[in-house]
Length: 313
Image 1: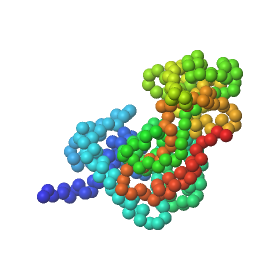
Image 2: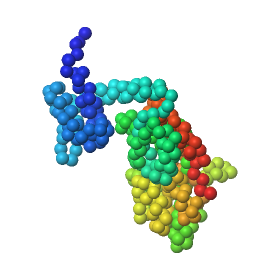
Image 3: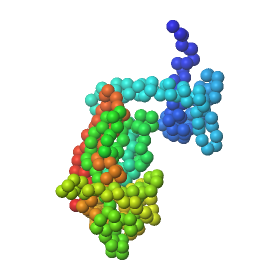
Image 4: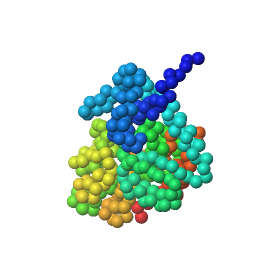
């Protein structure tokens, strides 16, 4: 049986730091995660490189990249550190009171308009729980980026996550009264090709797909649209529609306040946009045999808070 180098068991913090660096490619983010200075993070990597006798991280003024040896070491130890984190969390969760840190991510519009108020009431009710909320429309890899929970709109939650449905969600075509007065209100999806359309930023031509119920079965129309703005954030598209720039395709949670205030109108209400966004909101947690009580408590609170969905009336 191989004997363990007596110095190796002193290097677990250094190896863990390398794992985080592989996940974030940022000394600043690793320092924030660990509560250390960037100099301390750099020293840990240097200590590890000195022990293994080779370079593990290539540093430039603009980027951080692991060498082949560094990448292999990080890949081989990532799951072990994830298992340790889950085990410690489960041991801590034996207490009856939810406590600890929940790191979560959510879309920008949903987080700003709807999730933040829910978190305020939750944290008042659960003083032993802390939440770190990252708002991003980029889909994050939860386990690799250290998130405990994600709120996402999707039609098919991933199989390798625990998923709780929070409420239904739908995509809407919206425009301001001023825009429709100037350019007319489309009565069929094909007319959208003649309008200024504000689309979510995706590769290739923008094709909107709309569907309505018909006696012979669902009627579906695909229309290629163009417009002055495409953006990767639904609030930007909503605000552009509010300014009269065009017709925007956005998720309901982004436009509901403007619809209730009669500042926007739903365009083609008999037609349902499909394929643009998910049809439900889910809370997602990386799969594990048990779920931390703090996460359970937060999900229960969100399920209650989002139970009504986003009615515009």
